[in-house]
Length: 224
Figure 1 (tube, rainbow, N blue to C red):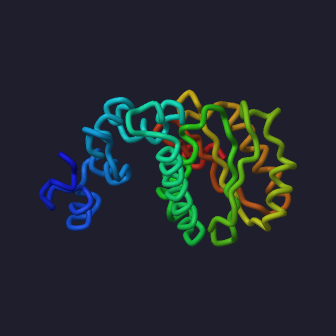
Figure 2 (figure 1 turned 180 degrees about the vertical axis):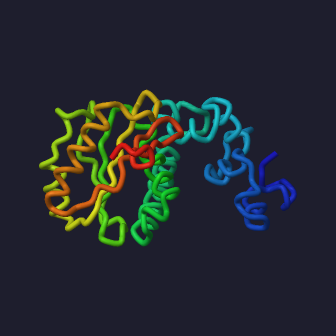
């Protein structure tokens, strides 16, 4: 039976409008995103199939194009829509940070960093450039590969700080292993960067290490 033939109170879209998005199951939310089903399968059936194949919502959102498009009823168009929805979510969080003190909104900062970086398959070193009220001016991914003293160049970080007229920075990088424990190399490069930036009166507020579902703060560990 098509969703349009269901009672109004059971249709995902009508349920969302009446009760709010939080009242819907993962499958119901996905069904609204998918919009239409295929011959013999409703959008909700397809959504349940995706959850079965990929395990959960996160698995679907992080699936590659080939794997996603191989599923029944999926294709390049729906994959593109999904990636656009993800990017809109990340931009919404970033724009909120641009109006907010990152230190007093540390939970939002961590949520944004985790959402942006946790699925990367290689190490990426990200800088959040902040104004003197700790609001985000800009963000840039500056270095790729193994994050150690040979890869992260303080002079490049200083150059980008001056370009953005930043007053403070928050660094972040991911551990593709999924373990968010800072290494000795992480601690060492953070201190090198902090010392270099201090020469031009730019404050280093934190360095966040992103693992699989968790973020570790070097500032909270007393390692800056």
